[in-house]
Image (cartoon, rainbow, N blue to C red; front, side, top):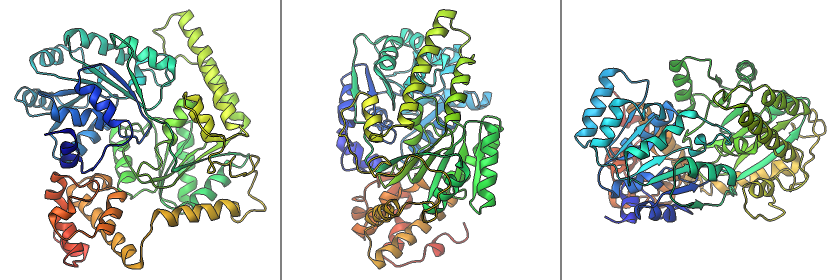
Length: 520
């Protein structure tokens, strides 16, 4: 089976996204490669698809338990056998996973970096045929990156135990310094970087300087429909902002590291399923969350660097539909961020000179973040040029290019806090994203209802059933047979077999969604 056939059968897509095929070809040729692709650019497919073409079992190093669990669930839903090994598993669960791996039950096995050098895992890895090691969120290996995790340094030692096995490293944001550091730590025999464009044309970037952050936040949440994320610097702040939104009638939940694992998982699931509209979170939330229909990301506090900002803002609009990324800025943000950098003790394993150099680089990144937040030139161009990409001077869709004022206090003189020009453009973007007739709009809502029912029935997040883009393509193509349904973007063989009869019952037979799953 060739690449396109696998793409169609398992993932339901007729063609690769920009940059994917080049990276996949590098993997299949056996070369080490570093792939730098934007959030939402389809990084995971660059190792998932090769895993189906290569012999044996591909190993994926992933930093978060919740992330690997979601990825394994999504792969199994697509008919791809996958498993994971992490610290949340009981001894019996680990033994069962090890046994299944030895019997060839998986094409992909996800493992937390902390588990890589345990005796049990090392023994397992050396017994199995492993054709590829994929390193997700590879920036975590660099102490000059924005999310350094010392446990990632163990990957180099794993390479010594698996000689000749190529490595694919993936990240959504890496400056030249970080990229060079990743390849050095992973012992690439020669530099090999494949970059995709960081441009996300469906995202509208805005900055508002305001002393009334709560007012600005509430106005945007009222005026932009759909699901969103609000990033807040502190745990206490997430709880306060979530309370504020709930008092205003918006379903909202706080997410931070101070919550127990079970409570975090519950809140994440309720947000993924659509029960909660807005997640108010610290930067502990979001890595690897594949919720495609996030319509806005608001930063209540300015992050300390553009790498973090780009990654977090990029969680909006992964379905390709218009989405808003708003930064609420005040001078106090800079003062607070600088204090946190100067008093940080995040990396005690570094010596005094290394800590001093890291602090210098963190302060330089903060300066660039501040330049972005106060820029009077195109915000999209600022971001792209920071990551080494050429960009036009006017994107036409950021707050600078739309000539929206940077200084905003309480929204006086505005229609509910939204400039008339901004409101007109927002309505135009929304209308263009849903080019439906009256019948099609009704059918689209029918399919959304069916998707929600199926998600509840199969205990899956709604986005793992089908994305909004798949539902729109379904409405426009109006499939009446299984073969026609396979032509819909995002419909692979496994999803056809699991969900096809339900969708065809609505589309072809005119059944009501609620009648199809009565009685569970």
